[in-house]
Amino acid sequence: MTRNFAAWPIILLLTVLSLPLFIMYLFLLVDTFSNTAPGSLLPNEFTLEHWRFLIDPTITGDVWKPTLTTVIFSASLMIIVVSVSATAGYALSRLALPFRRFVLSGIMVMHAFPSVTLIIGVFLVLQFAGLYNSLTGVILVKASLMLPFGIWIMKGFYDAVPWEIEMAGVQDGASRFTVWRRIILPQVKPGLLSLALFAFIDGWSEYMLPRILAPSSDFEVLSMYLNTVSDPNSSTYNFNIFKSVGLFYTLPVLALFVLFQNRLMNIFGGGTKG
Amino acid sequence: MQISINNFTKTFDGTPVIDDMNLTIRDGEMLALLGPSGCGKSTTLFTISGIHRMDKGQLMFGDRDVSGLPSQKRNVGVVFQNYALYPHMNVFENIAFPLTVRKDNKADIDREVRAIAALTHISELLERRPGQLSGGQQQRVALARALVRKPDVLLLDEPLANLDAKLRLEMRSEIRRIQLETGITAVLVTHDQVEAMSMCDRIAIMKKGEIVQIDTPADMYSNPRTSFVAGFLGNPPISFLSGIAMENSFSVAPIKLRVPLGAHEGIADGTQLKLGVRPEHFGPEGDIAVEGKIAFAETQGRENLYDVALADGSVLRSIQPAGRNWALGDTVRWFIDSKSAFVFSDDGRRL
Image: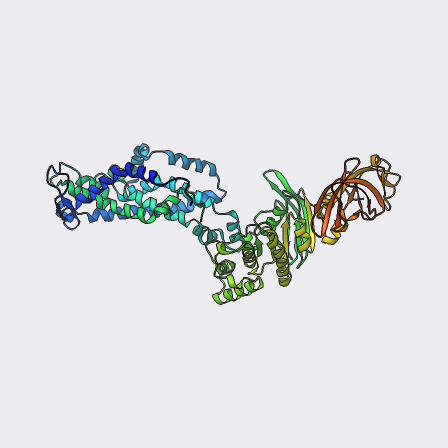
């Protein structure tokens, strides 16, 4: 890449702008491993006691059960969203379906709707279906709210696959399904991967839906657990433990972002390069 | 295998593209569908392949009626204009794909793929991916993939359009060689008359969904049925003069040009006619003198190409061997070879 201008003023500007965020994260990290004397700004001792919640369920309650629940929640969400989007996106991109335009604009509208506005309707449907207060119900709701985005993205990736490749497959004697599985699907793999990551991260950070649609159930996702820990009126309240739990909760997302940030970016490129 | 298309009609969104077409492709021959864009040549090709369905008519592979069969059951090999190789598979897997779909056993697949790769001269490329190949190599892979399951007919959709000039010459003879070696019946779609003439046994010239003439390249060149066919074949192209019939001659009064109509006697005086003169039939030798001015000269190395503007503004093209050169603006008195000129009626029919 050739440079038309010096890079350092931009780097400087970005550094200054992100400094507040950076300092906050730094203190978050430092505080979980140290104690600070009252009134002081800098920590005075190193300690691991704020991370005891990982092994000692008496402090804030068992953290592993909500973690497992969150993993199940995010993974199921990921599987549903990816498999439905992969098939629906193909159908909308390639097959001459009746009402195709209507379905497409419907998806667009759904995509534009903030999910909160649908919550009352969703509540009634869940109540009717007997899935209120259950993990399955929350997963289904979250997945269906994510699907318009997923289908739309996947349709974009399928649209970028040349028509002739598909016809060549058919001409070579393969059924449409074989062509989809063996020829088309590998072309949209970058799209599937980034969609899977998005779905997982989105599921991991979901708080509102489990809170509203399963308030009194026996399962808890990590976001709800964090909320419990952060209650200043509780007897176990400890600000540094709250920070540790918060960091524990954020780590997987951070890790995924660091590992796959390039992949995540290409979801917005529409998959021009296969 | 002989392919015949009977009474084929195709309409796209109410617009008729092909109307009642009949075409027979003989066993083992290579036929070109030649025509300007939008003439229905690709539609015909994709109908044979099964991608388009016929609205009316019948398609026969030998004695078998395949009109209603889907592409998968037709055993047709297609080479697409952009080759349509599968980018995530290497060359071997690309060529093997039709066989793996058929669930042949591994040893057979390996043998077949290597045999066809040897035929198309890509044996050393089998491990590469399509992205690592040049255009000509991709074309060879596409050919190999189309041929590997021994199709009844090979269809080529503008196979040379994406290649540069030098590769185009090379692949032209390569495709022909492979077609002759396998003895497969082939259909080539092209808008380039040079490709059609150099590669094919017969050419079907199409215009607006109809086959205007079907003939061998040589016959079609020397005996075009309409002015459209005459104008489409030949490079540099034929030039036309407009005139009227006068006492058994083609006459252009303003420049006192008279070309005897010879065999075409009995045309009423005053009938509007067109005279087609190929560039090689107009020059310093011939029998009918025409005076004009060189309006354009192009050096091509072995030959020079001239446009001669006549007094009434019409233009005759001429191709002359290099050596004796005329310059732009020279006044020349050249001759039309009247026996080789074509006479067309005003609506383009050859007389």
